[in-house]
Length: 285
Image (cartoon, rainbow, N blue to C red):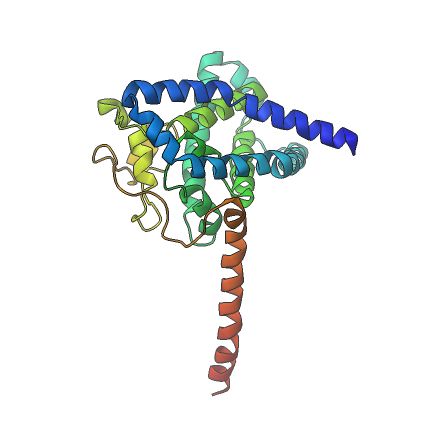
């Protein structure tokens, strides 16, 4: 038990100290862009930030250890079955910078389609937790339900492993997409101008989080906007200043966020129970 507590404490320390430099960098950017009003915006967002950090802590303590075991098991099965489209030797023949770029590009392509999957009705209750932050800050990139974390990690990592990328390239993909993902959740008016046709900007991603969007059906990529343009989900009319969040009555606080998918599943089950006798009567008639 003592060893387990020590490992958990070390995991917390590593996870939260890893946020110090991004937090300082994002705070500096916000101050440069918005001046003193950045402090007022940050103060108003504190309740949401607190929820985001609690969910992040829950993730570190309970979800990540199980996820690592699941990924190791899945990776072992794929290796035993020889499920690889390319061998590692193919990637070693390329310059390191090109392999790293292709890993990030492929990771964003896979993430684009996985993200679209999360907006379908079956997966939406878990993914809605991420969208429920109506005072979006960079910490919104830490707000995920455990169900959503599992689907994200398993789908993204499994498909990248299928492509046979070396481990160091997979780590670069994870780091780039993680920290860039935190950055694009910042409350910034930046659209990137012509570069928006290549990269996702904070304004681009903010349009993905607007409340009255019927599932926020635009701008699914994290790094490269080319995927949204290619598949008809790109939208950037300008800086986004409309209300954010979801229409679902999820409730405030981390506990309500964690319980929401279970409430939705209970409602689905109750609806099926009500429909079953009606279907039986119709069949008898």
